[in-house]
Length: 508
Image 1 (cartoon, rainbow, N blue to C red):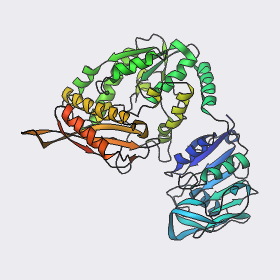
Image 2: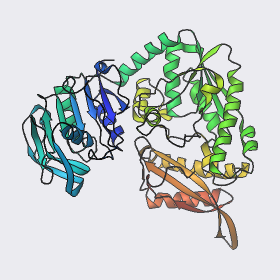
Image 3: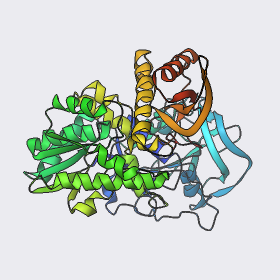
Image 4: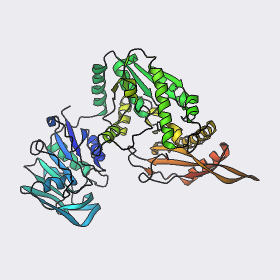
């Protein structure tokens, strides 16, 4: 693929947003750490330097060798990237008189291909404590705000650009236009990367790579593994063997419902009910991380047993998506705490199978669009994300059959209520947490001392950040009454209004 963009990551919290905005222009892009620039740079038609928490003036500031990029490939520096290009090419970067953070408006816009259709007073998002005091020689100012003189500039005969604001952030109202100007008009990239094109090229590549080999895929019932399964099915047909494990921690009736959904897709799926095996292993365990590890180990044991029944299998397919890949190759290296709840974490080494990951370059919303292109059922594509350990990390404290029953019943009422009230599609992820506390209640003339549950509903794009959903009070009241009246053992319902960060979406 020659029609693509390289994004060099300097550790900014916004780097993934840059990639998302580029993808929205139907242009393929890849994120690489600044210290690991691809050897064959000629496969990219443009390069974007991200922001960074560092200062270019610091001794430990990221300082990559850009000699193979500068003046050879169209280059755009964003925030730190712009300051980096200025600082190391004869310009001057110094601390801002005041911290430049939040909304600002362009007070000057110089006519240029880069600023085409960017109006005066266009809102931009600033996030830096340094600023470019002096541009390098042979650089021309293209835009400014009341506080930032060099908000945008060009150098090297229109090949290198810098902006001190973030076009990738929603609050930069014309940020997408600016990126389009740079990538399409200046770099000459053809915006032809669509979900249909992805399906066509991926299926062809999978067919060539896998041939007649047998592939095993652990289905979860979620969007990622389901879309990966359909892509593989189109490529290799019955040589794909799917395994769906019931860990006893799924939602109410989910095991049977998911198997029924897969029947209509023509997939070769085997369901394995191992719920007793999981619950027995979890008996008496309260520590969250230990519970995750137990669930992971039992899953591996069950999955491995079933996989051995597929004679001659050579590949393990996974529904890995791009945020997982980015995390593993980030500027700071893999995260200190690996996601131990990932369904198939550790399986490749354990099973000695080669790995195939058809979705590893897609974001979650792109996965859904690919699924729509494949004409997959809305029931699968629109399904909320669900954690690998399932209700195991939504039961705080002991995981018992009774606690699972209570949580399944309460969760079913909440999720069905969202559907009935037309709220389900407005929510990115929702669920109920069973808390390890009991509280006093009154039912009729009797006092009760029973469990409390917390409802959780958030909006998000990819789970990296999330805001709590302002569900109607009347709806919350109705669900609370239903849960307390219909689920024995629960007498109190609360609603979690924490955002991520500082909280997480799940409680454990």
